[in-house]
Amino acid sequence: MDVFRSFADAYTSGLQAVLDEGSDIPSVRDPLSKASDFGRNDRPYREVIAHRSTIENPTSCLAVTPHLPVNLSYCFGLLAWSLDGRNDVDTPAYYRRGAHEYSDDQHTLSGAFGHRLITANGNQLEEVVGRIERDPAHRRAFALVLEPQDNFRQSREYPCAVGVHLFLRDGALVWLTMMRAQQALTVLPYDAFLFMGMQQYAAGLLGVPVGRYIHQAGTFHFYDNETALARKIADDPALPASLPAFPTDPEGAREAARELVDLESRLRVAAQAQDTATVDKIAATPAVTDFADVARACLATHAYRKLGDTTSLVTSRAAEPAVADLISSI
Image 1 (spheres, rainbow, N blue to C red):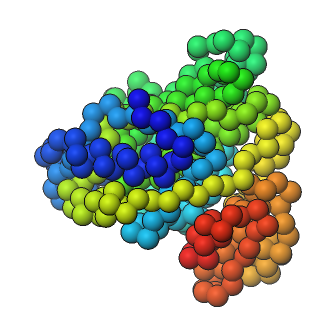
Image 2 (image 1 turned 60 degrees about the vertical axis):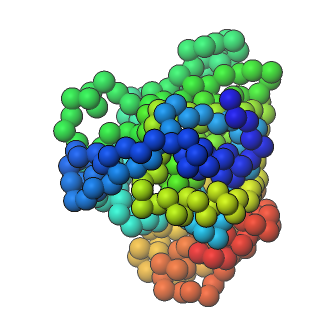
C-alpha cells in the first residue's frame, strides 16, 4: 500500500501509476453516463483497477500545480453543501459550470454524497460516530452512499462513491473512502478534499486527532485526451498546501461546520442578489475558527468575482502562503 505525507504526493503518484501501469479501455456507451459525454462523444480512457493510497496528514489536502489550478472556492462550497446534507444543483453550479447536466430534473442531484450520508436516510455520519463513541473497537462504522435502488434506476446520477468506513485506531480517527470509480486527474482533488474535510469534522465530534486518510477506487482513470496534461503534472509534481485543522473538540468542530455552512450560504445568496453590502460585511468580519476564516476569505473573494469585481481580494490570518496564492488567483 502506498503511503504519502500529503495529498499532493498521492495525487502525483496516482497519475504516474495510471500512465505507467494503466490499461487502455474503449469508451463507455451508456447515454446516461458522463463517461460517454451523455451519448455525445466517444471517451476512451486509461485505468488502473483497485487503486489505493494513504495520506498521513489529511490537513495537507491540496495539490498545487500551474498545469491544473485547483478551484478552491468550489472545494469549500462543496464541503459546506455536503456537511449541510443538501442536494440542490444550484449550489455546485454557482461554483462550477456544468453541474446541471448531471441532474435528471434540473433541480436536484439525488446522488450527492453529503445528502446520502447526512439527510436522505437519517444522519449516518453521526450514527457511526456514535457507534465508535460507545465501542471504540467497532467495525460497523460504515456509512453508505451507494444504494441498491441505484441499480434499478434509469438516471444520470449513479454515485461514484460507495461509502465511508471509520475506525478509531491508536487514539486517532482513520477514514477509508471507497469509490466505485474515480476520475484521477480533474475530479480527485475535489473528492479527496471533501472527504478529508468530513474526516476532520468527524474526528472533532469524537474529540480525537485526525488519523490516516485512505482513498480506494475500483477504477482509477483519466480520459485519453487528458493524457498529456496528466504527464505534465507527473513530470512536474504538484506541491502540497495545508489548511488549518478543524477543532478537535465536539463543540469546536460543530462551530467550524456551522460557520462554514452559514458563510457559504450567505455569500452565495448575496452574490446572486447583487447585494454588495452583505458581501462587504462578511468579507470584513473574521470567522471564529481558523478553518472557517480561510473559507470566508476564499468564498468572499469568489462572491466579489460573481459581482463583477475582479480586484477585491479578501485575506485570512490563517491562510498559509500557498493557500493565499490560490485565493488571489480566483
